[in-house]
Length: 319
Image (cartoon, rainbow, N blue to C red):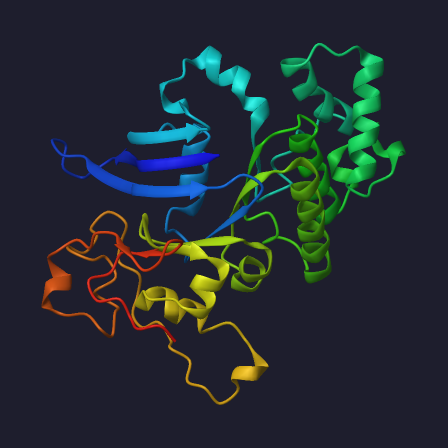
C-alpha cells in the first residue's frame, strides 16, 4: 500500500557563521512498509522527527531524497497537478484541533471545502455527505451551521477526522491526534478510527508518544530516534520481543501490574542535539550495551524475522 524507501528530509538553518549553514537532518534514510488495512504506530521521544516523517510522506513537507510508493507509483515524482488530484486518497488529521480548523468557517463550509476541490457535487449532495459523516463521528446533524469555537477539544478532533474521511481516503496520517485530549475522549477517538479503518480498509500511520495507545491500536510499530528508525515489527514483535536497547527501554516503562517487581530499564542521559548528532549509532551515547564499534560505525538493517528488523550492531536476545 505505502512503501517508503531511503526517505530523508533536511532543513538549512541560519548560522552565526555567514559562510556556513547548519543542516538539520530531521528524517534520515527511513524505510517502511504500511500494508493495506493496517495501523503502523510510529513512536519515539519528542523531537525525534515523527511528525516531519508523516508530513514528508504526504509531501506537505518536500523530502530531500528517497521514494514514497502509493501502490506502484512513486508520488515524489508526481507534478503538483498530479499530487493535487491524489490528495483525496492521502489525508492527515493534525494534533491540534484548535488551530487546524478555520475559525471563520462553519462546520459545513469546512467539510464542503474538500468536496468542492475533489468532487463535482451539488450543494444538496454536499449537505447529504456532510450530514452522513458528522453522524458517523457521533455528532449531531444540527451542528453544521455552527463554528469551531463552539465545540470542545474532543468534538473538534472528531470534526477534523470527519473532514479527512469525507473524501474516502485510502491512507491516513494521524499526527498525535489524542495528545491534547483527556482519557475518555482519547478512547472515543481511537474507537472511532478503528471503526473507520475496518469500514474503509484504511491504512493508517499513527504517530504518538503515548506507548499505551500505540500498543493498543497498532498492528505494526516503528521506533524512531533522532530521525532514524531503530526497530520495526509487528506489535507482538516490538512489545514482547524487542531487540534494540532503545526499544526495550522505551516499552519497559509501560505500566503493567503483571510485571510488578520486575526491573524497569530507564533511559539515562539527555537526547543529543538534532544538528550535532553523535557519530556511528546515534543511540550509543545513552546505550548501556554500547561498544567501541558503536561510536563510529553506522548500524545497517538486521533481519530478526520475516516481520521484524533492527538497526543495532549487537541486537539483544529475545525475551
